[in-house]
Amino acid sequence: MHSGVLINHREMPSQDDVRDSDGHNVRGEGLGCCGWTLVILSGILVMFSFPISIFFCIKIVKEYERAVIFRLGRVTSGRAKGPGLFFILPCTDSFVKVDLRTVSFNIPPQEILTKDSVTVAVDGVVYFRVLSAISSVINVSNADSCTRLLAQTTLRNVLGTKNLSELLSDREEISHSMQVTLDAATHSWGIKVERVEIKDVKLPLQLQRAMAAEAEATREARAKVIAAEGEMNASRALKEASLVIAESPSALQLRYLQTLTTIASEKNSTIVFPLPIDMLQTFLTKGKYSRSTTSEIL
Image (cartoon, rainbow, N blue to C red):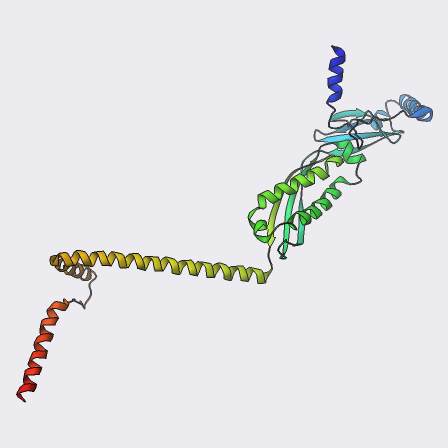
């Protein structure tokens, strides 16, 4: 039963364990006779110089920090120390502090040629943190700088496969794709990329003018179509109204009165009163008849 517990514990290594390229756990090998001799001499020196040596042997790391200890150039115990107090030998041990807090940095504007041959300038922001303190120290010389440079090249590679329309509309998908790509590349460095965001996409001035002209033309065409549809609907309504008035002549008189009421409420000095064509037709007919009679008499 104890052996089963030990086996399960070995199958779940800590995030600070050192691993090789095959994923196997790597512990510091033996220091050898010379190494152990130096360690023993260093311990004896600490004992003889006690309590003065205590100020050089005891170190403190904060809650968000971890210390990677090297003893004669080898990582001790395969794990990072902290938070709190830890003990080192002043002559044989050295340590490196690693900050585990999330770090953000801006990706400088990158000139990118999209898939449809449009040159744009794109910048972004990346959020990452150290997941394995030991891997970030022994697997890469400067994890922060390497992550920044990799983010720039990844931004170029990902956006180079997108069209301009996709770049402007699918920012969330592009950010997720970049985050997955960066996280897979920095895993061996002990870096966890938590989030990637595209901040701004700057288009050339000529392209902005062309897109603005295209959008304006599209809106004008849409406005003309809407106006034509309105005229058509209005003409249909007027046709139906004329049919109703033709069936009931009194409706026309009521419409006249309503129009006069509307004009009078606006305090106008001039009132235009429409007359029916049928009324004028009588006078026109009489005028023609009188002219023809006069011409016959003459």
